[in-house]
Amino acid sequence: MLRRALSVFFLVLLVQTLSVKSFAVSTSATSAILMDADSGRVLYEQNADKQMLIASTTKILTALVAIQEGTLTDIVTVSREAAYTEGSSMYLKAGEQLTLETLLYGLLLCSGNDAAVAVAQHVGGSTEAFVSMMNETARTLGMEHSSFANPNGLDADGHYSTARDMAILACAAAKNETLMRIASTRSATIGGRTMTNHNKLLSYMEGCTGLKTGYTKAAGRTLVSCAERNGQRLVAVTLQDGNDWADHQTLFEYGFSAFPLCQAAVLGQPLGEIPVLNGTKETVPLVAAESFAWPLAEGERLTSQITQTAPLAAPVSAGTQVGEAIFSLDGREVGRVSLLCGESVPPQLVSALYTLKNGLSG
Image (cartoon, rainbow, N blue to C red; front, side, top):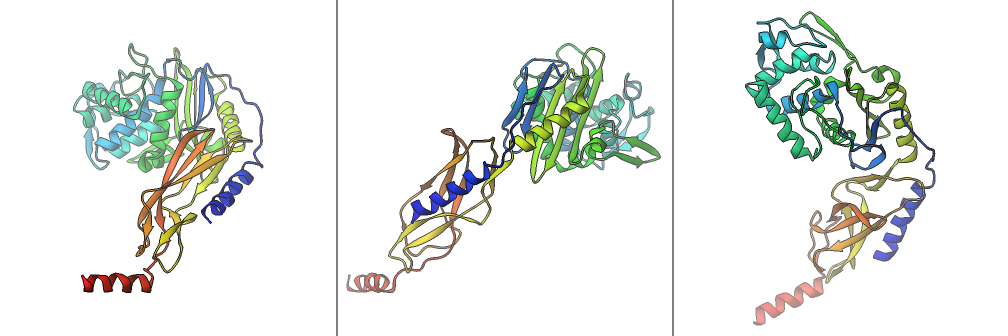
């Protein structure tokens, strides 16, 4: 019965791979990557590990650290150093007081270098201390080929990253509701300031949810973006790309078309069944403790293996974890989901009476 259930499951996965479209993709960028935000699977890459200047896309990390370590309602007093920071600005004035959340709008919409310094000084106690927090967060995320020297992305020695590392950062940012709420805002008027998002993809492309633009003369145009379609989230990164708006739209169209999500497990839905000893039923259904999906290209097929922690004997309670479903692609594990008993199975009455009788006679 278990083998039969699994055979049907494999068939469903195979059917889901048959409608995938296939076409080639390229960009004008020196370095680029397209990644599925939830699985982390790389769908396209081009010189993705080349260390490069990243300009104001740095501010994704600045915002992430500030949200994780700060309090949005905090009142921040703008220092003279912050107010006079060169480059793009939200036009802060020394001594001005704003909430940390307002500064984050200025950081992500206006790309304010002044906002970045004000945020860093408040959350970290000093710009230098905050930069240390940025680098520690980058290491924690697995950004192995990145180094940050400031919170705003101005060109500096020791300030660089890669397309792959920035995609890893974007995936983390995509999971932060506060950051994405701000980054997806096209325009906001707060405290007499009207701030317009520099990210034109928000209006150019349906489903774009952020993230951040960047430019310096040395770095060229840099862009990190996120888009969602049919429950699937992708992040794209291009570094030194004069045609980034079009390239990101092309990358997203490619990703959503060529790598649609295969829903391998759905929370609460059965994935098979296993035998139960001495129960009123011979088997118990196994249901997924969580959902699991993986992006698949044409011709690819997930396989699954069910592992059982121990033989089951009645009584069995619904919701008891009894094993895992392990999903693999080309022999490599890509994920696993805990399996729970889908229903309770009481012991057979005869078996229960036999046990009781033996207990009394002993």
